[in-house]
Amino acid sequence: MNRIYEKNLGSVITFANEDYHIFKSKENSEKCILTCYPLFEGIELVYYDVHKQTCDIDLTMGRKLLQINHCQEGRIEFEYKNGEYLYLSKGDLSIQKRSDNIRSRYCPLNHYHGISVLIDMSKVPKCLSCVLEDVFVTPSELVKKFCTNKSYTVMRENKSIEHIFSELYSVPDNIRKGYLKVKVLELLLFLSGLELNDIEERKYYSHSQVTATKNAKDYLISHIDEQITIPELSEMFGISQTALKICFKGIYGDTIHTFISNYRVQIAARLLKTTDKSILEISGDVGYNNSSKFASVFKKVMGVSPNEYRKLDVALEHTLS
Image (cartoon, rainbow, N blue to C red; front, top):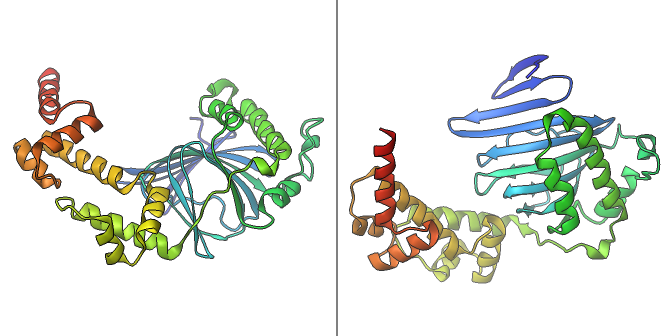
């Protein structure tokens, strides 16, 4: 990298050259890396590579922005100051106003890859035809179109969105900046011509629902050796069973049953690698009284039986030694 400067701003290290800026926050094995490309006056594109729960680098603070977000992998939560929570999962696109109305961003799965296009309404030209003839995109009209009655609009993945964004995740370095400019103009032109009745409404969740659901998840994983029912969780955390099931899937992307089954298998896989415990002992440690049931679930998730998994790991160690 041709570095113009390198600064350490508290826990955030920044690098910059004439084409892009990198912002990096790292704690142990967890990391948050944002790569920002200034493309036009008032328009930037930012790549997110987050492997921690908190996305603790905020390039939007204090700016009057129209923010377009696309989730490539993982999940991201936006907590609004009015108590609403919005979640993006793989393939989702959101269009949001940002004037310090977002309280925080959180990654429920400790994993998020995505892109944001940031349009600074105080700097961007009134019409982008000055950038490219016949591109009659007016940023202020996009704000009115998508963010008049609320702070955001969300769209699920469709072929047009997939086409635009899939190419943004695999751009050769030698043409990157010019290519990004073309694709951002394509995205803005697409949104300008989009009919609002094609947009699917995305449910938001209240602060009390999200808090209860996160507490229920934390309780489940801290009592992994116990069989805890949804009615028990509902009563324990003061949320209806229906709301708990809907909100859990909204936050974590899976049903409670699927999430906790996968989590148990991941814990069991680690124990198979790092301990000499028997498979019967490990199945009990992760909440299965029946080792046959445990083996069945393990194979469904990992593709091999617990015994085969342990043998594969041992064989790999011998190969590497």
